[in-house]
Image 1 (cartoon, one colour):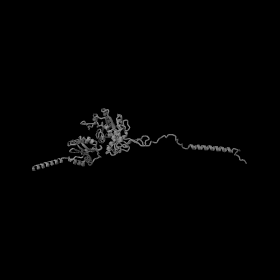
Image 2 (cartoon, rainbow over the protein chains, first blue to last red; image 1 turned 180 degrees about the vertical axis):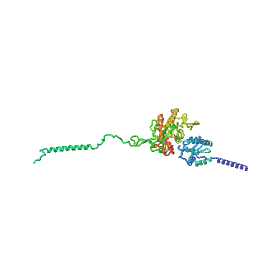
Image 3 (cartoon, rainbow over the protein chains, first blue to last red; image 1 turned 90 degrees about the vertical axis):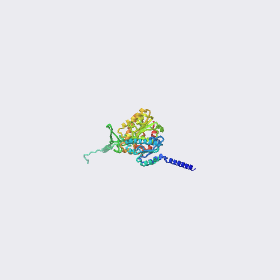
Image 4 (tube, rainbow over the protein chains, first blue to last red; image 1 turned 135 degrees about the vertical axis):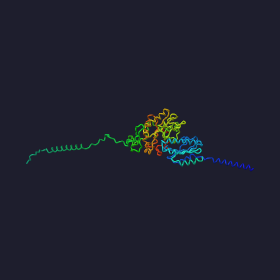
Length: 156
Length: 315
């Protein structure tokens, strides 16, 4: 009888431990729209930013199928933009990061002759990922927004 | 005693008096007649005036001051209008023409240049957005803005800095697994309508004719590869007042210089001219969008204006 009680207690303890381990590994989902708004509010842009339709943004950034995005852009007068993506997986996020870096380099080459004043912003572009999420910021001053993005992505 | 020397006869005193009176009367007539001939003539009010005062409301104003000369690569020199405020005030002023009898001068603007041409697309009943599903839009950064904010379900072959020459040389389009030029895409892709807006990046070109000639090559290529496609050449719309007044290149004078050549090309090639400029300029000819960040690109509300114009001007 005593032995049975010990076994039962150990089993319960084991179950509790496993349950706790499961909870620690789970990250809070990011509100894509909310984070994008926060980033745009924190960064300094040269011109007002405008929300893009999600279908336009998904095509613009060649985001993986099934991605969720909230993006902002200027009017064409500057190279500024900001976007937050939920790509669905860490693998998709890694692929998108690589794609965004190539796109950013292409824009640097374009703006070098078209509007050289915008090149420093592109060279300072923030492209971050955490879990399935990706953040892109091209701004006059992205430092505050970058901090917010890093904090949000840290737990992913 | 009778006096000698003087003779008088009975009855001759009355006749002498009559003669005197007659002579005096004649003298009076002569004096009066002489006086009348010396008076100035009154004008004849029934005759038409020999000269007319100019019609009120203005006169033809032409730039009279020298404009900057830019030497073309082939050594020829061609005048290029400078910014509107840098030279004397009349040097770069819009050309004003007065229609006879009108009260105010008509100012030539980017929108007025292409209005009323035989090839200018007239207003029609608005089409549904599905009209644009089989269209392609070729253009520069202004078309890039249309891509972002128009909401049109269509295809864009556009890039910042694109011009009528780099359409043939810049392989920036990602198609069929590779990078191609717009000209390549024109040759190989399927479409039924083509909208083109180029010119803003060519404002500094010395030769407007070169711009038009290069543009014509795009038209020729489309007609060669897609003879049934409907082509719309869109006007170059205005620059904002502040930028236009302070920029050597991005100013309305250059816009109008290229616009005239563009319109001539459209007439010569009998290609549809879509006068978008007329709804994007203020009465003074400058960009209507006061909120434009740089006087060149539109803010979001005005992309909607552009779209509405496209929907209501089809062939």
